[in-house]
Length: 334
Ligand code: UDP
Image 1 (cartoon, helix red, strand yellow):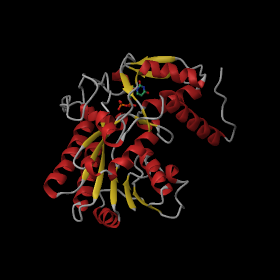
Image 2 (cartoon, protein in one colour):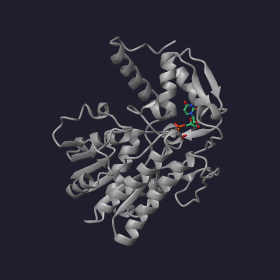
Image 3 (tube, helix red, strand yellow):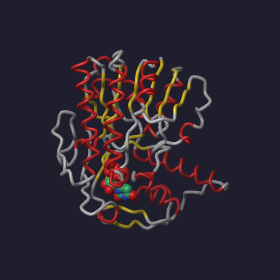
């Protein structure tokens, strides 16, 4: 099978590429390295069957060519990370909407199968958990930049469903909940890589707000396995699926656990949202997926516990720090 992965040099895209290569598929990626990096694909760059294109997915000519060549398309190229969204709202909105438009437009010519990755952000400020795929979405006002991410991804979802209904392009939507694992960078605000980096380097661990807000984290391997099953399943077409973990943890508990697992002497400090992001920033207090729909379809069950997820990130960052310093990895125990 020939697989196209947009955003294939990103954190999730590069793991997905690796799994398809392992299965013997031919993998094409397109990535403009805006948030992805060559480092993520260094180990597969020279593998037979792997082809990379360093361009934006909004390049019509190249995307048309790649879509035409491949049997299925995973559309992962997007602006991600709350920090990026707050700092570069124009880029977020334009990248997310234009990229999806271009992919679906070209997929429509030969009705290629497309999986669109969306996000749990689309549930917005909804406070009744768990979130079910058919729930109403509760957005904040348009003068609060954060919601532009949720709205741009919601437009992507509308588009994908419209292409299925009107033009019979087989699309499926995966709403990802806080995916974590090796290769994720904390540069765009993601909490676990940030806390782990702070803990390993002895810096203060910065909990935003009061730390009572909670999330459910999922290991990238669980997510990739789910995406590979979803894109192939005939009954997934035209549908939306939550892909996430079902273990809820508060951000303060998370900081404490990371401090424990790394044996760090870092202090846990609280930073008001206004200082962490921008004046008037609104966070989601809770975010828990209902995973019964995807479980019923493909038998999905997350395999990685929170500690296993955290250890995989800790090991990865230790290795990276060691490589950078040319020294052995720091010992984590008290
Ligand atoms: N957060 C934090 N410290 C950090 C980064 C994030 O306390 O250094 C908090 C953030 O305010 C949010 C949660 O951790 O409540 C998860 O943030 P992330 O950006 O990873 O994902 P989100 O769920 O907000 O998309």
